Length: 544
Image (cartoon, rainbow, N blue to C red):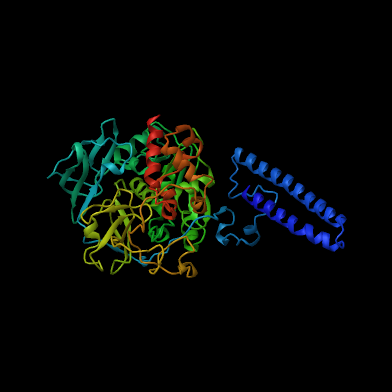
């Protein structure tokens, strides 16, 4: 509609300029002026009719569930479609989706493509608050001084005792740390030098019923790999998801390259897909990076899954964005997601009978002497991960990427699903008139900074927000970077007013914090959009 209004205004200006020209061309007689008015008036009328029909078609397409962002339902071709690049050669025979919205933040400090063992890491922790829906005070079955094997039960939710949370490594329990109101902050294990694992009796996928498969996964700790949308919670044991989605790539700043991580673990990944296919009534969907030949070679070989090739800037690698373009979450739908490395761990459990707590973590950031990929275990200690590798001591540790990760202290631990640690400069220095005198290069979607002239420049990231929270005004910035048919600003306002029906109608069930992290980055108002979204999701879940 905005394009139609702009063109209508243009034609109106054309009318105003054409009328005197028409009068002049007829020697100054009124007849030429009248003919000019009639001609331009007819053009305006025809364009108004065509614009109305065009917009009605797009509205009806949206009601029918057609994604108008990726499927052009207009009477006219989009300008960008006339010059769009073709799909990569490896995408032939697969669903190819090119996203036109988003923004890539290029930072210095990427890890080179080689994996080494993290020999300096000796402490690992399982953190209860990493699991949404879990009571803050779960039933802990171990205490300091106990010896555990990888796969032994550490704690369980009192309201759902069948789902076990297990040790990622073997060793000695050195601390059961309590937080506010006696909640459990973490359970820390001093890892053995030679790892030992509990052996499970693995059921045969050809013979096992779905109920027995679910029971085995719950008892072995593998059920905690799964995540349910909406709300991002551990799924109920009795629910059957419509579909299961796996994103095999990540487009966040300095994110790890999964095509490197999967090398040598292909059999585990294939087995994990086979297990997932037994859990859903629908399909297992793999989102594959369309800009990487290595990703196509690595992930298009697997069976029992539908592959979808995505091409575009961040957040193209977010599983929520992929769900939206493959098969959106309806009002009464729920789907499951699982990360690529957790699919590997799930397959390893069924092939070897042992809980696999291993993880490859990308230790990244310009404040490191040597960014690297390290092979470690779930919940690794941060200080030990970066031991002897810091370029300075005035740094911020981010568990995850800089957009959606969590700030941590040096002696904290990575979260359960983290596959990245980012070390950036602590931005606590005030920059006078920084908005007026953009002296230091910084990543920005705005053309105010001349750095946009250097699209491949890699920035040194810092935690400074360059301003404080301001009035929440309509800017149109969010829609430019979110490749989903959702209006984030209207959604945020409905959360602030606790309008549950409007929140649901505006698509809150399709979103997770990582999906709008880029919106928060470009926000002029500095609004805490991820925090607001979580508050809204919790409100919606409380109504169930």
